[in-house]
Length: 116
Image 1 (cartoon, rainbow, N blue to C red):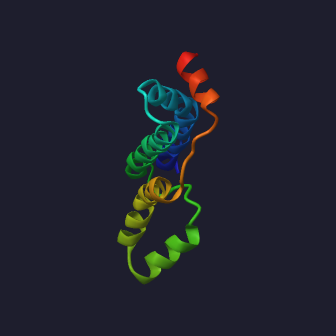
Image 2: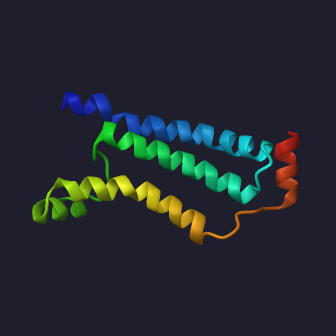
């Protein structure tokens, strides 16, 4: 139990950093003259990469997909579980970039962020 506690805080810490840093990352991308849609999607990409990097450290603790994990482990092994959960953030980013259309808002927002 103690070994779980040593690492269980890591996903929450990374999520907190993303909550604070996500807006700053978007602002930085906008300042670099990226389009609003590209800046927002790039921010989510950075967050997904951080999540993917945190998986080996935190293991599968806290994952919502307990039933899927049990089913895969029972029928196959832990290998597909680690592959599946490791690829989820990357799949989500791919869907974001390819299927989500424009995330542009009013041009006034972009001007305020760059000037502000």
